[in-house]
Length: 196
Image (cartoon, rainbow, N blue to C red):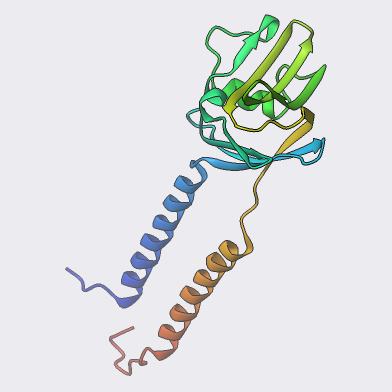
């Protein structure tokens, strides 16, 4: 059996690292994606975001904040209310996501609204293609004080990585490249003609 040369071992280690990184990158893309919700309309407008996993249609978080009231809409986003032509046999998170990005039941109206009740606030996302054909993601939160009704339109966008995340990613890659380069320069040169 021939002895392994240093070059083959380095190549094996390099391929193992590249394969591991490729596997990590593939699993990272399969993770839930963070989306921001941009609201327009009555002031103050709500703020909100949600985590959605398209691989197994599911919202793991869907939070909206308006006037200091937190609306956790995760459960209702995973099981939306559908009416008329928008109805399907088993509405699920995929229906909600299609609605939120404007590709389902929102050609006539596409809006958000907060409505007050006796001791509660209701936040609703609503889209309709006709008066009786609509979809809603809504939740009612009990509160001690009520604010005037408000509403407007909304859009969603995928959140971009923060600069610190990108800096860590590129910094780590640069560090690995620097170490590899430094090690290759510090390797002693063999004077034995039989050794590579």
